[in-house]
Image (tube, rainbow, N blue to C red; front, top):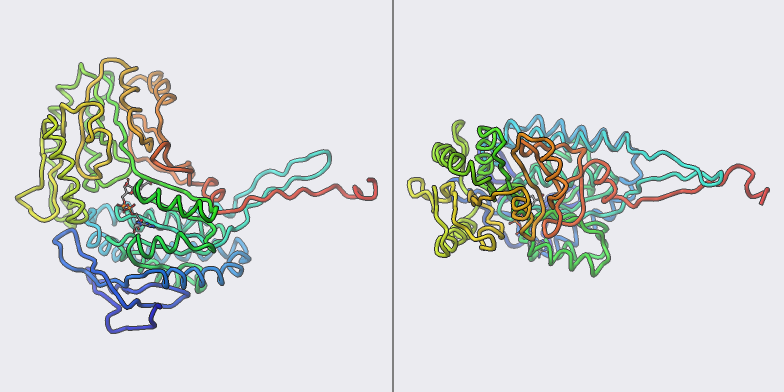
Length: 496
Ligand code: NAD
């Protein structure tokens, strides 16, 4: 059973910020008998001992969310939106703290957390608060009867998130789920659990009632698995890997619960000879962001053969100029990977590829100058189209380079994996871009750009990259039960 308060070991100081290491259930901090150690990818140092939740904590959190649901669902839209904006205010007031803790916990660049990620975390709340207030469908008429469509809150939402962009991905689910009038149990990833705890503090300070947002810490196979199996859960939204998605989809199937799956990718970046080569090289270098731990990353470079040599030389030069090191440094371009087990996984992909005949044009192993979890940005060529390194997600700073001679061959290569999350292309020919876009299997296609994201757009993947779309009204469609109310015209019954 979850234990009560145990303040003595409850708070860790991380980057000078006090972070509560316990669960947040029904507006209270709750501890577990067991803990697990959270370490920093920057230097491997232990950051905190986190409460290790399991079935009891998951059940307690679902209880709380279930009890709080009717009150929150009936809270009027204006008030819900006001509280979500107050959460956004709280996030904005603590951007420096959130950025510092997130960088300590997952090793992504501090400057990007400060300037890009955390402002967008706040925006997630503002956007879905505002979208709620203008969410409507025009009424329509059926032989004098009015059809009125409404989005009813669905109930308790189980939200399970990965470690690569912890607070961004958590709030991308929490904000629409709460805006829709649902209550939430969030299970953050065990490798980066800290900012979810700070979010609970911020939401409470913003006046979110007890039980509306709950955070259960713990391992996926314990806390996560128990949460998604609970029959009182009305929606499951998951971002993470394909193998875990199979477990989660199984649990959702058993309870017939709608599930949203945002999974991995092996996205192509197609570079045509008519492109702006500077732009194309910029786009390729961008794929090393967050040390390659980006689901959308275009890790397969598909380059038209006639420009491949020049493109490759420029890319190698740019890659070798990337400054790798402490992610807190203002000048750092690429930081560490998340965890020793993940670094080993990345390197084993690369070593198997090299053993199978691939050639490293740059990189090809851990950065021995830095030690720890730093992996050198790697570019591999001479890879077979069906090689593991070309078809499986590495989730590290590893790109492959293949060439093509025709547009048809480029499209065939682009679509040749089981994934379909995103694709990017660099071309100076708008007609070609239009033609190719229609043939690519991908939830998002970027033409001459990368990572431009708008919350109004549907986001998700095809094939094994996911099931469903979130964003704008699509989020409300997922987190709500849609209802059509048909009202007869006045006098209809007496006329009948
Ligand atoms: P993961 O699947 O190992 O873990 C994700 C979450 O699921 C964690 O919170 C984990 O504790 C939990 N979990 C694990 N087993 C579980 C189980 N049996 N039941 C319930 N929950 C369980 O993924 P990861 O390694 O944390 O994240 C990396 C993956 O996420 C990559 O494949 C990446 O592409 C993907 N990702 C996708 C998107 C997207 O939007 N499509 C975004 C970011 C990351």
